Length: 435
Image (cartoon, rainbow, N blue to C red):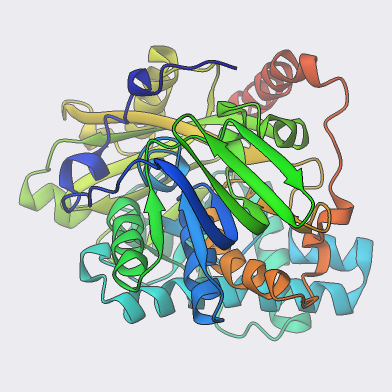
């Protein structure tokens, strides 16, 4: 696969416009040696590099573009202790012990973000842990959310979850359209690109080599290890980590991983800064928010701007139709924003898996992987770096349902895009009729 790397566009995002200046990393030239070569300088790859280096091993990170160009710099900056598969569903399908282990991993992931921000002193990440509200759009979904919250309290001991009535959600959001909701403490928000750049800078300052604009075009085994080849150089290592997630098809070296993922384009818009009186009325508690529709939307307030995002953008490029749909949904929730201009709009790819959970582990004796975060990757990918380091050391950490041996290829892979469009269209119809 040949690609013009300089032509790959950056996101026209609020994060890009407000981020700290990026460090300039060299392009790999010539041959390097390492214990572990890491493909991808997102949260997964950088966290893995940090934890591997702390173990006394030598990592090298190779990035096809610039650190943060992919999902780590394009997401909404929402941090949650959850999976797309609910803990109640996990309990029903796999038993209480597995549900408990997955609950522990989820909460470990949010703590990991806080740990990394503290360890590297990333004040510009603006991390908050104020919680998230799931706002119900009708009585049916409210009942389901309350039932889930009560189950979490009863079975997982999650005593901090709080049920909100219509007035409580109105006070939280400034919107009258919701009938109630559930507050989950411990979740939060972050400036995702500043977090990423802080990680890259911190890891590099501790002696880890990061090379940008160095796509791995070939990954081949040798007698004593593995070689990652780039257009101008190569890294010889004992092990390789693939941390490319939904951008795995950028080169042939990692393209086979794309067959385990359903890439779903997620779009985000951000308003101009709001007048102070309006900004104080909407989302005054500074939490993050989601709604209960099948085509879920989420929103948060950052720097007196409403950030509003959701899935449903199709194709490989930004979609005007998706941005228009987001704006319409945003104004439906917040009518006061009808005349407020948009300042930014951008999108990125979410890696969805067939079983709705990420996967991590060994593909073979020399290759490790972690990917498939299903739209909740800021925290989980940060944690997976710690587990990848454990695997690289020869350990076998308990990763529950995330075990890569459970990962399944997408059947009828060439038909994935029309299938996604069909399912999403059906969900949009059900949401439209209030089901």
